Amino acid sequence: MKILNMKTQLHLIVLVALFVTKFQSISAQEKPNIIIMMTDDQGYGDIGAHGNPYIKTPQIETLGEQGIEMSHFFSYPNCSASRAALLTGRYPYRAGVTAVTQVDHFMNTSEVTIAEILAENGYKTGIFGKWHLGDNMPMRPIDQGFQETLVHKGGGIGQAAGPKGNTHFDPVLEHNGTPKTYNGYCDDIFTEATLNFIEKNKEKPFFAYLATNLPHFPLQVPDRLAEPYRKMGLHEDNALTYGMLSSIDYNVGRVLGKLKELGIEENTIVIFLSDNGPRHRRTKNDSYPGRWVANLRGTKTSVYDAGIRVPFYVRWPNKIKPSNRLSNMGAVIDIFPTIVEATKSKLPKDLKVDGKSLLPLWLNGNSEALINRDFYVQMHYGPTPFKYMHFAVRTDKYKLVSPHDFPHGIVHQPTDFVLKNVLKNLELYDVENDPSERINIAKKHPEVVDAMLERYENWFDEVTEERDAKGIQRIFLGTKEQPNVNLSRFDWGGPRVISRFDYGGPRVVEDNQLGYWRVKTLKGIYNVSLDLPEVYSDGYAHLKYNKLHLKLPIKKGQKQIVFKNVEFPETVGNLHAYVKVERLSTGPHFVDVKRIK
Image (spheres, rainbow, N blue to C red):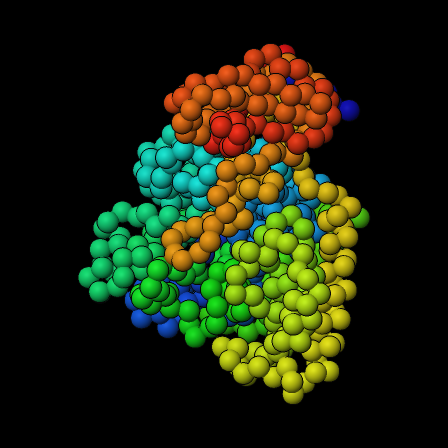
């Protein structure tokens, strides 16, 4: 046998390496890229093609023209629940998520997200915008499978999660867990970060989650975008909202343009949806018209369809036939299993997924898995779920509704008298023929009501028992991943904490003045700094954690106090930090907990 000379051997090695690299590149390209764009409080009626007389959304509608629009797609009626459902494919109650503040939005760290699944299957993963499932370890997106993160804290920029004074313009955002000030308008910043992520990972399969915080309150948008709607004579709030929607549409176009520029649009699944319906700002006289809702009933936080039916589009060139409008009922819990099937990803064997894969429907019109399905919705505030309160069970044909005029106030177990009244007045709608939910047929079809109610009861018991077994997720203090933790009023619990946001209007609002944080500490020495509320007289600052109770004197007008070299054990408990002046205890705005050794 002839021995190859060294030069020939080197050539062969190079050729083999090139072949392997090329094969790996081809294999990687066989996996589709995934882009999910989720907006915040954009209702079904906030689309030009849905009859809205004011706004045009050509870029968003392009996705439907080149792919599919699902006209009956349902989410949860609030931000956090929908996001948990999207990321896990599970009912948010299982994950610990019922509402949007206190501990109600804490997603349990044991949940397996689509980002974790895709990362384990060779994808690069990134989130840009709104997370709203916990701001601290172990609930941050960087803890839940996202390798690149640029997000704001809490449920919206400017909320109590901080930083104080933050706005949509030149905001402070968290980049991979570290706060940084950015220049520009938030929606443009998040989109630009998404485009950079796509560009950087164009040769690999990637998952980009562009979760803009628009058009959620506060209504802040460049004047040039709101001005055209002011000229239409719209109320200022609506002009600002539609200006924000115009920003969304423009930036959707930027994302689609980037895919075309890079030549990767045919191998990229693009999904667009909203997290819930539109918010109606209640004023003292309620004199101005709300948003266009396409003749649907309700608003955000409502279990009527305007609160949960959202715009939904998907595009996958050469796989999904264009201009296909489907009326099959899809739900936010379906996105997870659909992506898993589309990417041929592997799941943990014991993972229970509630959603159904929509891929057979999208690719060949097979809707067998969606026949005779129920979608369950419930919402209230406070960490304890209550059966029968403010829920809906929806099928393709019927919808059972237990409405509540003020779901923000459902924080205490209703009395038997209230429950009897609720059950007596359940509503039933034939949504197939009455999509506006105007004709209550519950008395005509009690057998349908009873059957749907029993299915709801079984569902509630199952998801609540799983949630109770896990308990409320605690914030971790002293970890190497996050040695410095910022605690805000947004994340505390207790009897004097906010149970809802007040954006104006004739409502009774709890004062949000005193609470505590559910935490887990690692043994170590900490400095604990309190950002004080207005101190109108001399008093004391207190720090309590299980058996530990420290206090330091404070002076009138003092802005900050630091408890130095505090020793925390390795344990769990409720961390209390407050000031006491003239017998009244009040909580700080922020508490920084830093492990120093």
